[in-house]
Image 1 (spheres, helix red, strand yellow):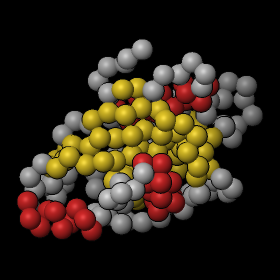
Image 2 (cartoon, rainbow, N blue to C red):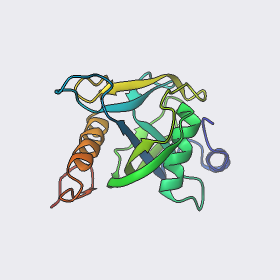
Image 3 (cartoon, rainbow, N blue to C red):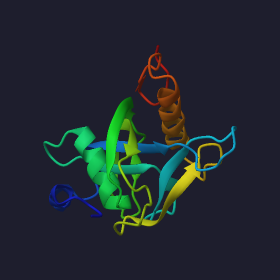
Length: 175
């Protein structure tokens, strides 16, 4: 599902003007599939069809939908995997984004760490992505600093859950 119907309706009234939207970034982690003692966890990434960027699964919450439900739904839609939310990693506003179709938006993104339930073989589940796969967190094809930070925070939270403090805002680290 490329653009939620409620956004299409709003856009029919306001055109490409800026929108403030609720969204999620779902960082899905698993243990390494290599036998090395030095192996790092792996993260599930999708290659976006609109700009070719590799990112964790992202999506827009439907009206009235809780962010954890959005994260699980988006992982299923985009990768065919069943996931469960393990932890809140952070919340913050993205920079203003101009999408390839000209739509302008800023997202309040809730970043969550998820794990897969059952088979962890992903597939391209919709037309939002052209590829999907698992990548060691030490060798990421991700370019955007905010996405790299979300992945690093999810790994840190997974490794040290008792002492991890969720990030509040993407431009600074608060303790």
